[in-house]
Image (cartoon, protein in one colour):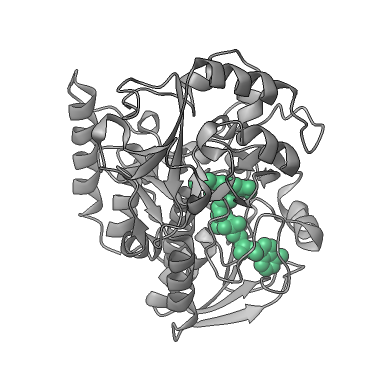
Length: 427
Ligand SMILES: Cc1cc2nc3c(=O)[nH]c(=O)nc-3n(C[C@H](O)[C@H](O)[C@H](O)COP(=O)(O)OP(=O)(O)OC[C@H]3O[C@@H](n4cnc5c(N)ncnc54)[C@H](O)[C@@H]3O)c2cc1C
């Protein structure tokens, strides 16, 4: 049995590894390091192009449950992420270099995987093909793909800047997690009312890199300058919210507060949480340095904004995640209309499970919507008006057959029901 996987990102690595673990000989194509997209920089596989957070760990949260279901089904990336984690309160954040290196090693060293360097420009023939070239798919391959899938849909996504923590003024910053959950994992950069007002006024007029209306920005990734334009206090209810924090210098809650989250195990680099942006690099330096603790901060990477492509999965894809018109071809990852690192990996895993079943002549595994995976893949394969990418959410999961008023208890019961079900699956 042979399979071809195109793209060694979150979805492609997960798919290739799963198939290889089940005895399928896999050809895995990757264009890096010969060609990099504008958001990819590392020669390693499974690169985190922006935040280093894989979202919540708690099993009674949507993304925590997604990761647990993946782990139970044999995920490659979830256990590696835990091994490479860095402190981030309740979130699973990873040292991006360690994480990508570990995934790369697991994939490259697998005896059933042959890695082929270079850009794929046409859809190859094989028993099964998994296309996992990501939201920045371009060039000849994008054209080849659009002959299979028709025109792409798209939206814009943005990445936040990263600073060298040694250059953050710790006389103006303090280490703490919101509501004391997670020890001193975050570095907080507080602002008083005047400092916030000054920051707000300057960000409103700051120059943006591309003059574009960015109507179609994924909600969780709205650039900070776009958020600022929604109202004087909008940022204070979003990325600059001060709730759950007390500045030890004043003994009071700050008027506004930016959190920095650790990027590396070494603890040298931190990202500006929620500060994805499309401002020009010089304006990022000028305006973000108005936050007192960042006055002399050195920016190791500036924020950027990219167009993300995805296919119209509800029209094109069967419930087993293969293309209706080309049942041996699966589209995995963000390109399939899921949103997020782990959702992309989950999509690679589910495509691989069903590709394997197809190779074995078995019926597909179509998970019910009592699981997070089932809810997510049911969503992207069910016709909907104005289809937009979707991440894990309890709203995708079927309700319990009994009412539980407390939200935490309800989520715990939903999670337990899902895990009980996944534990019954035999592949
Ligand atoms: C700028 C930006 C910021 C993002 N920020 C976040 C975030 O903070 N958090 C989050 O959860 N999600 C984020 N996302 C969304 C999404 O989670 C990531 O894009 C994720 O990496 C998608 O995984 P993937 O496997 O689908 O694609 P990728 O991880 O992009 O993998 C695709 C791989 O295919 C390779 N490839 C592409 N074309 C070819 C070809 N023709 N031949 C051979 N190889 C090819 C690429 O080099 C790459 O290695 C962001 C996306 C973008 C674009």
